Length: 242
Length: 49
Image (cartoon, rainbow over all chains, first blue to last red; front, side, top):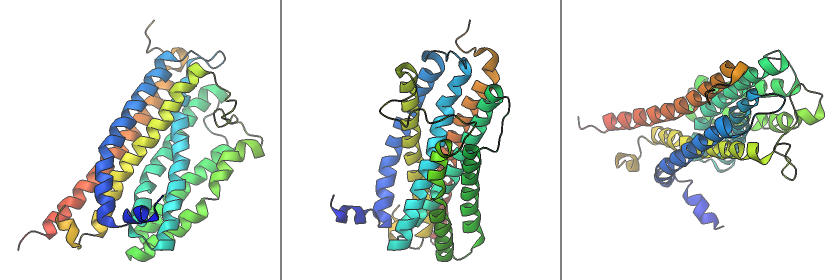
């Protein structure tokens, strides 16, 4: 790919125009896929022979858990780009991802508790998967708090980005926690792409939900990121034309 | 039997649906509000005095 094209979107006006064009497409496609996935998961997929209808919670738990980690990875990558290339757009994108990622992590934990209560008999245990996901939530809170407490924009960007980059180490720990330790949380279901431990009739709504959530996330970040870019560039001439 | 009936797990399943959908909509409206606030700040800044 032509690197010049990538650099082009590092400029605030180009990023803003591109994000505002992309946003409605991502939101509509994301919501459409999520709606189809929800209908498939709640009403079409067969009951699990052991868990009954309670298994349907995975159609909301798994996409939010995937998104909590993907959002953090995106925030970490944006922070690296911001620090290495001193890109204001990358810092703005990283900052706009943080509240959304925190919300998705909270949803993953809450829906996990709603699944754990009837299935495990308890809503919470300090096992490796749950604890590492909880640490992810704390990392998001730390990023948001650090950004809010430092008044000077550039220092706040750098400090929060360093925290985001350090926190990337938690992502493989979350993913492999069920392999490395004996956990109450079940092992991976669909990440074994060659042989997923879930039947096709149950799998397709889950995949639609995951893709739908991801596309919706891109749409929200387009809107939130452009708002952040506008605020940072409020004294620039191009902003007056917006 | 209604298709909305999840048996013993009604509360758990529908609470998960509610929490997830609420989070998606809140995140979108939060981003939209931030954008609206940013544009109105800029418009106020550029108002002729």
